[in-house]
Structures are given as structure tokens and as C-alpha cells.
Length: 305
Image (cartoon, rainbow, N blue to C red; front, side, top):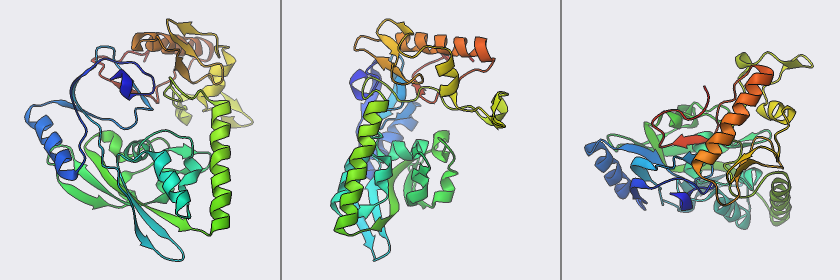
């Protein structure tokens, strides 16, 4: 699986498939249910870390990728997109067709299904703000239903999908039509967001932010009467940026909450660095960082708890 995720590590999956239709998706789920296989739904692999031993089950990578304008008025565009569509491709489609909204997420890797799973965000924008409805499939029965945004119980980095009972087939977004001048402005903003992200974050060999921000109840440190929930603050303070490493894995010199594979790292190397980061933060601030990155194929939790 190392060629199917951004970290570039991990062993083989016992079973793997790429359904290109709803019926193929249903067949894969039926096979997993009949054989009592563990399931993992893979998108672009941008926010996961796979065990060096691999995954003893079925990994499904949906290839339902159609992008269709399902309704168009002077005030709104409904865009229906398959779960396996790459977000950057969808943004390009929108800009080519004078549709605004999703360019706010320019430069964020992932598929539509994976982006909804974690409810991607950039500054004040959340993907859930643009969702109109979605078609989902049940893990065990293969039944299909259409749901509203409220079904997802979206939060910051959270959605109902994280219970792993349902998976997205496609999603319909309510977006804004625009004229050529507005589309050209959005295209420029799209490129500037990407330029900013490239300058600020590592562009490959990483899962992005490895640890999530803290919840209010997890921290006691306050600055200007506000709880310091941002994990990057604590990681910056312990001086690990560009300095902490093990094997081919290291903390990025660009961002203290991003681990990078130089090209030779194993998952074990990345876990070793992550555990060292946790220990340093805990020893200094008495708070324990928890991963935002999804840990795949581990029989036991590999980090400090």
C-alpha cells in the first residue's frame, strides 16, 4: 500500500478493490460481510498511516468519479460528484464552468468521500457549508439512501462517517454561478492559495497535520483569557521543527505538526518520531497530543495514550 498513500509507507492489504459503480461497491461490501473481513475505505491516502505489516482485511478505493451539474439557476448550481473524484479535479471543473465555492479548499489533497469524512476546512470555511445532500451505502446491507447534511452531524474534523457504518457514494454541493470576470478572479485566488500552502507546508511524504487540536477540557493553559487548544503552539515551544528525526522520518522544518518521509522511512520510523513528540509535549505541558492522522492496520494502539 505504500504507493497508495502520501506518507509512502505501509505493507500490503490482504484484499483490495476499486469499484467503479454502485453495484460493484455493493459486491465488495457483501464479500467483506460474508467473509467477516475488516474494512477500510481509502481515498487519496493523504491523511493516513498504514502499519508496516499491512492491513488484514479489505481495502476499498472507490473509483466512482463522475462530476455532473444536476441543476443550474441564476442563483445556485447543484453539482453532483462521485466519492472517488479528486477534489482538485472538481475545483478545476468548477472554475472551468464558472462555479464558485469549492476553490476555498484549493491545495488540499483528497477525494470527495475522504473530504466529507473529515469535513475539510480552510480558515473559516468548512466543506459541510456547501453540502446539499449525499447518497450513502450501508456497510453490511449495501442499502442505498439519500441524506441531508444534518445526517452527517458535522463538526470540526468530524462527521457521522467516522463511525464506519456508512460510506459515501456521491455528494451534491450547492454552489454559486458567476460570470467570466468573477471566475478569473477565483482562478487567481485558487493559484494564490496553492502557492501559500506550498510555501508554508511540505508538499509530499506527509499526511498533513499529524496531531489534532486539543478540546477545551483537555488543556489548562490560557493566553489572553482563551484556552490554548492549538497543538502547533505546544510543538513549536519544544523546539522540534526540522530537528527531531528517526530513520527516514523527521519533523518538517516548515511546520512542527507535520512529519515527513524523506524517502526511506518506514511506518515504524514515523511512529517513533510521533511518540517522541508526544512525550516532549507531555513532559513540558502535561497534555497529551492525539493523532488526527488515521492509523490503519494496527492491532494495538501504537502511540502514547
